[in-house]
Amino acid sequence: RKIFFEMNDRQKRAINYIQGLVSQIQNKTKTGYIPKEKSYQIFSFLQKIASGYIPNEEEMEHIFANLGTFGEMAANVAKIKDIGYETNNNRLDALQKFFKENSDPAIIWCKYLDEVKELVKVLPKSRAMYGEISLKERWKMTNDFNAGKFRYLIASLQLGNGLDFPEINLCINYTTTFDYINRTQLEDRTDRIISTKQTTVIDFVAKTSIDEIIHQVLDYKHDIATIFNGKRNSNSTR
Image 1 (spheres, rainbow, N blue to C red):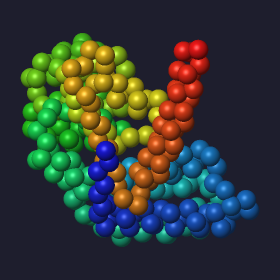
Image 2 (image 1 turned 120 degrees about the vertical axis):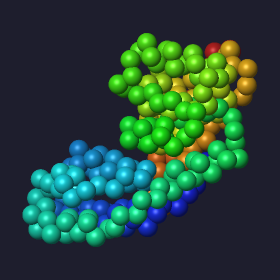
Image 3 (image 1 turned 135 degrees about the vertical axis):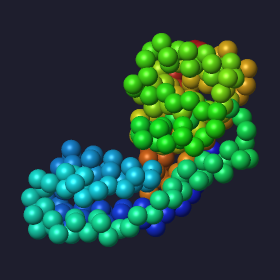
Image 4 (image 1 turned 180 degrees about the horizontal axis):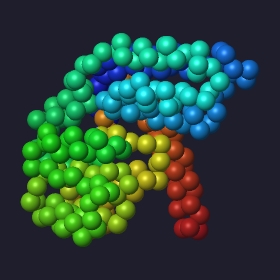
């Protein structure tokens, strides 16, 4: 299930501004293409903006530097300051609205560490799990969560392997990536053979943003995997 929400005006202005800079660069280069490494960086930047983060001038300069035309656009990049400073995060608002109507314990997966640290501050009865947490503490936290000692476990995407939550039936992807295998592994943390409940998976998606493209790709990969697994199972029963 996908829950769609509108980005705030500042996010929309930031994304439109960066896309405008990309168009300028493409028009000024001979090939019209941006180097692959820079493309990945810009794409990741657009996703961070959709998640609620707005870059500062120095970060913008780092991304667009060494593209050949950056010197001509330095003054334009400085206009990032003109985007404004709205503080509301519509993704967080959508999540809090969802929890007002759903009281089940949930594991919340986040791509960015800043999101993990933000959510654990605003969600009651929650704990955060990320890279700096020791393995011993992760296991203790997992056991406490399964025992119902707190309601929300907020975790970085990279920490899903090896952890099981058989008593949890609500899995929330606050932000996600193109990595379909990693995503299915995260969902499997709650959807195990020993689980007593069916898992519900919720995705939060910013409208007209990189989020929608990511989910289109994930849906396509899911369809391919379904076809492949169907054929493999068919062959194995012969």
